[in-house]
Image 1 (cartoon, rainbow, N blue to C red):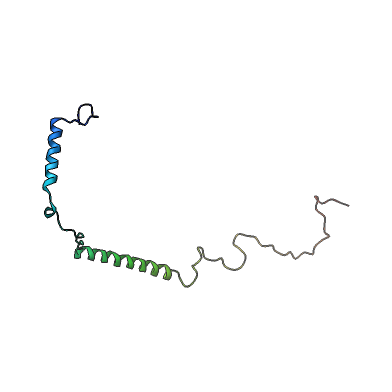
Image 2 (cartoon, rainbow, N blue to C red):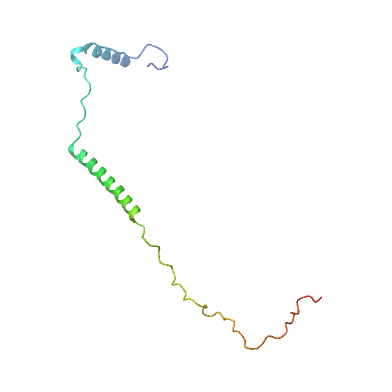
Length: 116
């Protein structure tokens, strides 16, 4: 490019570069180019294939173990209670009513009941 950046006339260095590139482009012919062929397929090494197979087998084993332990995991009978059950009968510390041997007297109304 020239100093202003808009003209077509170039400096001596630009003219020399253009001439060198044009000469190089003219010197390349069909014999210099490689033949047209698809790129060769990359050959995978045995180590990479073995690593992938091992990872796949380990993943399958992990899934099988997970299924085995989740399906088989539950007990056949219900779980034991957290506390032992209380013995039958009255609870300890709760007083039970004792029947009296006296004959009941006339029923007296409570003081809070309204009288007729």
